[in-house]
Length: 436
Ligand SMILES: Cc1cc2nc3c(=O)[nH]c(=O)nc-3n(C[C@H](O)[C@H](O)[C@H](O)COP(=O)(O)OP(=O)(O)OC[C@H]3O[C@@H](n4cnc5c(N)ncnc54)[C@H](O)[C@@H]3O)c2cc1C
Image (cartoon, rainbow, N blue to C red; front, top):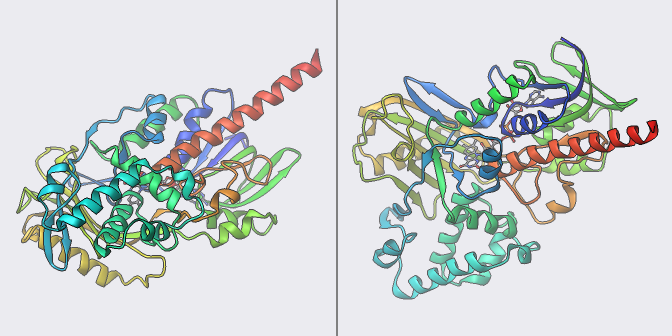
């Protein structure tokens, strides 16, 4: 295998594969290096006993940037949108969720005054320009919107649902509102899970000549000398590249660079806080209570949704695949056993006796959902896909100032590829002019 590449992409998740797919436009030699045995990163889906389990609940924004980029790349996305509605739990009581017009007018969660306040709050979310909220935390914005503790709790819950962030006192109001607005336009659960996106991106990349090495970790990146980066791999092998796109997390990037280069973004990357949660992914032969498809706790950070009601997530299409999730606060001292008990208790309430029907149950006590909790001022530190190091680009769910989750990963993957294509075009036209 050649040791000199035009582009080396570190990481074979959504960001890496989207970048690779866009780079196939040019005549470049491209290598994707993935430390895992399999590709996909956090968009992987495990097939266990004919059931397709995403790593926790995954919903794709119907009208987001990610969907339009994937469509542009020819990726087919099949699946359905979950209906608005479900149950909200507060102080051990269950209420109809005030998300649909019917829910709004029938729920006993809200009195008439609160009903009007909730409509006004939703209206504000829909109509406000998020650009005006760049200097506020989400909590500061919510406090201005309402005095009612119930309305505030509902807004925090909506933010958890749309962003997975459970730290309203820290998270940027601008990014939160942007994401709530996007989520309100609808999401889809994908047939076969998110692996179907990865598989399609992978197939196009491979048939276009892109090389892939799995089970290989990039240990060090030595910035460009004579227009070449040197990368040292886990087996001590050295490879060279003109451009590097790094799609790992910010801490891994610092580790790979740290010893060899000082750059200003370094401390910002070091201090970046990840958004984390615990997930209980369950496949059942049937639901004890088939009518219960979605629920959230208003004050405690719990989520439940039956994804297989809208997406085909098993070979026979008959079983029920659901996810129960706990949103972690950055200061949480995570205790796996108690998180598991809490999630199982939440599921017991919604689907009593579910244990009798288990095909597969998998608990992950802590998983990074997004590599960056978006905070005020992040946009001054993130230079889109560019870094201060010429030729080194970053992509991933933490690298776009205003986009997070798959939106951030996919749009930054495209951005990094476009930046490299532009740089190549500029170089080629400069060389051409020199020749004539
Ligand atoms: C529980 C959960 C629920 C989620 N729900 C949603 C949702 O509903 N909607 C949504 O839009 N998004 C959701 N997400 C987020 C989404 O899955 C991620 O944002 C997206 O998959 C991140 O893609 P990425 O390419 O940026 O990173 P990753 O998928 O993490 O890919 C990075 C890759 O780099 C590899 N790597 C790291 N270091 C090295 C190294 N040194 N050398 C070689 N390889 C390396 C890793 O193994 C990994 O495969 C969820 C995530 C989780 C965990």
